[in-house]
Image (cartoon, rainbow, N blue to C red):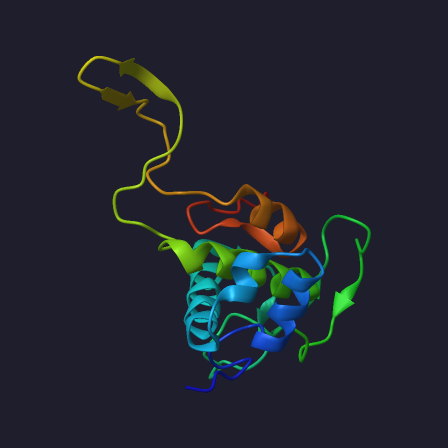
Length: 163
């Protein structure tokens, strides 16, 4: 299966290979291309499902959330810059690579993974009880940090505007 940037994923295998080679990651290097393709597709789907991005779809018939139009970077060194409506920002590409590595070993959105504040933990006959406000899904803080200037937050958040 050949993946297509903009249709299946935000990143080619070669670009992901270069990203992880620069970080000397043996796990990514050891994976087959078929496994890498699946991981990149899952990473892209996760990004599109988990985050609400600023701007608008460049083409309403496109399959992925990027590229987008009217995207002004809201934080970091590039604050105030605009991306072309044909560009997938490097932050999105890097986030895709980071999530793809995670996807090599586990689903990115597991059904029963629950992280967050522990209310009670019993050691003998192990028992864990999470706080009511604890998130019910796994989170990827580094990925959120990479793309924070391009998002309105996660899809679990709502952007409020005062008019």
